[in-house]
Amino acid sequence: MRSSRPFALLLCFVIFVHDVLYQKAFFCLSYFCAMLYVVPTPIWNKDDITLRALQLLKDVDIMVCEDTRTTKKLLWMYDIVYSKKEFLSLTSYTSPSRLSHILGLCKDYDVLLVSDAGTPWFSDPGKTFLFACQEADIAFTVLPWANALIPAIVSAGFPTQNFVFLGFLPTKKGRQTSITSIVQSSQPVFFYESVHRIQKTIQQLVDAWCVWRVSIAREVSKMFEQCLTLPISDMLEQLQSWKIVQKWEFVVWVRNW
Image (cartoon, rainbow, N blue to C red; front, side, top):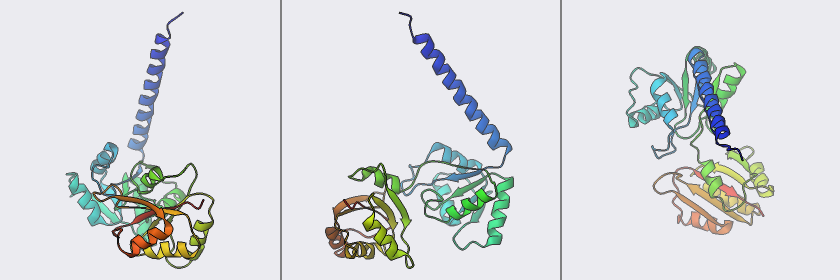
């Protein structure tokens, strides 16, 4: 029988050459064309960042961020000099003229889009900005990594091949409709909730006859990370008695069967 080793070596060589050429092609594209880089930042633990993200934080001089002070603290934490970088704040209240100015920069220069924590465009003002970039045909690439949702999905004690993610629930208009859709969903539902509304949300789920179990995760990747699954009535009692520390944001997931 003829050995398959030469063929395997040839295959490995072809794959290696393909990867090298692909990386060179992407490098050339990003070198000659302006690129917007969407860079996730750690939710809390500063070690939860990729090498590529660190390199871009060092190399790119125009940074679009939620809070410029928070981003500067992030750079200081990684010993990155930022005195010559330009910082542009992007919030839900950014004026159309300011947004147009930022889009103009993205057409001519490499720009970094970062959030205060986690992945931009993931329940933060970055999503509106990237919609505008798509409409303006601005090239952008999204780096993978940090958000609180994926750890919650992985740690859920039930099948999650299919699920519904709602982001933050509406605070006023449409809130009751969202609560009803959660209770009636045939798939697990994940959403984010503020510390100021977590008790109210669980109470509304109880009032809407959600009778199954509910899970919450808080302070994901932090020292006092907590993930808890209880019957929903017990979860409400734990919250009301402050047996669950109520700080920062929560990831909540509900399964109704």
